[in-house]
Amino acid sequence: MDREAIVNRIGAEYHTVNVEHEWSYIADAGNKETLLTRLGDAAYNKILSLGDGALHFLLDIRFVCGNTAILIETKQKATEADSKQLACYCMEEHALHPEHNVVGILADIQGDHISVWKNQIDDAHFLKDETALQKIAPSGSTQEYLCLFVVHTFNFLSLAFQPQHRHCLFGDNHSLALITVYKLIQAYG
Image (tube, rainbow, N blue to C red; front, side, top):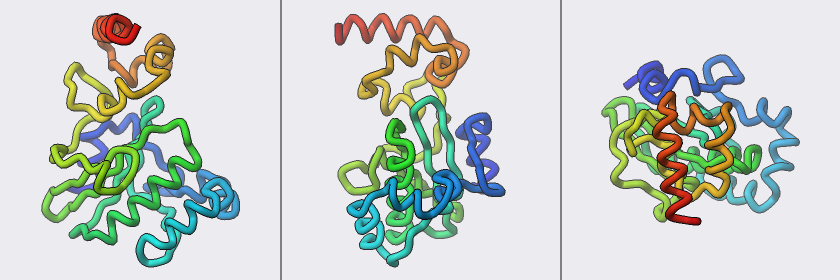
C-alpha cells in the first residue's frame, strides 16, 4: 500500500502536512530549540536512548481529527528500529499537542502489514487486533480510530456539542451523535 492509498483510506480531509508531503515536528514547534524545550530533558534523553541516538522529526503521514492524531511511518520492510522512530514522533506529538490522543502506525508497504499502538509505542500499548487501516472518523462502525478514545476522553461530551468537532466524532450522522451522548450520560451520569 503506497502513501496515497493510506491517505485516501484513513481520510484525506484529515491529512495534515507542513513540509512538502510530510509533517515536521521542528516546523510545528517553530524551530529545533522550541521542540527540545517542549520535549523536556527526560523525554529527549529517552528519545536518544531508543535506538540510533538521533532526534527524528520528519513523519511520513499525519492525520488530525478533533483531539485525535494518527501518526504513520511507512517502511519498505519495517523493523524494531522503525518502531523506536515512531515512538520518537509519538513523544513529539504529545509534547507539542498534549491534548491529542495518539494512534501510532508502522506501515510495512512492501507486505501491507501494519502495527498499531495507542498513545505510546511499547508492548503495553500495542493493539494486536488492529491488522487493517481504518478511517479516522466514524461512519457508524466501531472500527474507526476515534472509537479507541471515546470512552476514555474526559471532554467527549463537550466535543460532541461543538459543531466544529461533531463531524470528526460522528460524520454527518447527527442521530448517532445524540444516541451516543444519551448512552454515555446514562452509563456515566
